[in-house]
Length: 223
Image 1: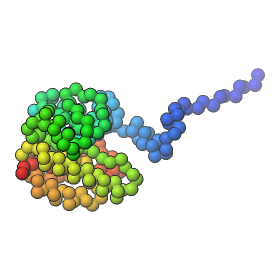
Image 2: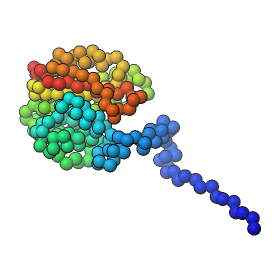
Image 3: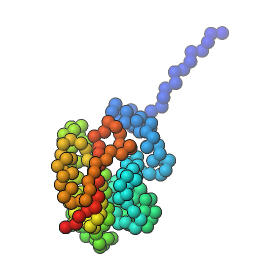
Image 4: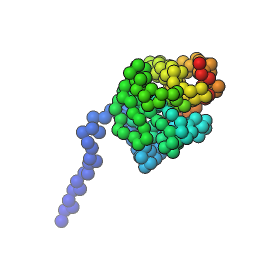
């Protein structure tokens, strides 16, 4: 009796997967293999970025129980989640973003542009006094042009720093994401006039091939 020819088994793929670019496909495959992405899923966090804030806090102790914290550009909300956890539900976390995010227990969400008077007024209702910590994990949509992306994120960083000037208590702290490209140096010099200590940090959860780095301002000097 002749042997039957085996059928070739094809891997099932969705319409979404078929339409992915090579770079997007590689990104998703890297995410699957990434220990931080896996840990975030297992622990209920919304993104792997949560471990960047955790490590920064372990090194510099910027977040403590009872703090009032503002998370700029908070979507999808992982930094706000970690802030709540670090304070053990004893303080206040206000998440600001132009994009709506799903509710996070223990977090007040304001949808809008943090540079506007409307957003300022809403924040004042939640926290009439100045805040203890300003966080910014904001980044522009990348264009593939490293120089342009660097300038775009530096613009966001300057806006975040100005927000911190207006809202931080004396002795408060500031954490902000940057892309390396040259302008981070004068930016750090500017912050040194406003904070007792300024440091750059690249957390373990930041990919090695990424230009991402964070700047930490410790001990706001006030006006």
